[in-house]
Length: 217
Picture 1 (cartoon, rainbow, N blue to C red):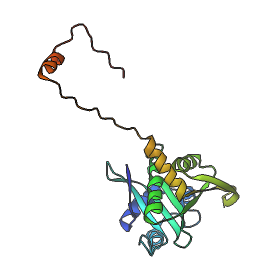
Picture 2 (picture 1 turned 120 degrees about the horizontal axis):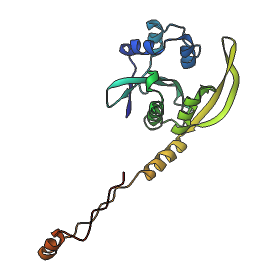
Picture 3 (picture 1 turned 60 degrees about the vertical axis):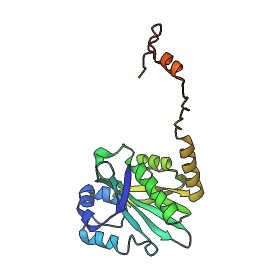
Picture 4 (picture 1 turned 180 degrees about the vertical axis):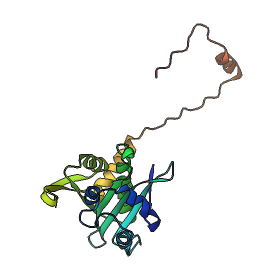
């Protein structure tokens, strides 16, 4: 499982180690930061964040509960109490060796829970570069819907990158939660029957004519 904890200055070295190239930094943050990622830039990033009722951005590290190890980063920005909306940004599974394990989907689902239940949001949107198909699949699994494409919206080197716009609304998220709960397996319980002493003794006797059925794995 994944839990989200506030991102703090103590987490700067880990994030800086994860973002080890100019291209990865640009994919993660657009033009917000310059490479290499500095402490000063991250202090600015954290200013006025993570204060319920006051902040318009909430920045988290993702921690794997089984190990207590930080495995990713995610933020919810542009929080508008008036419009009850926010923007999901800065999603990163840090260790490349941990990618493909569903960590990003669990991070996204947890931040959606926070946004819709704790912050009372109605809409959460995001933009993801069109070449990042793994991320797009994670967002779809978490309940986002594609709205459109901003074509050639960013130039990086000699290339133009397009951005896929996606969003999820609170009623859609709640419907997804209800469907997931109804699909969960139900453990049935058998009623206990009190046998008479004679029947109990008979049922305990070995049935020599029967063999145990093999268990199929």
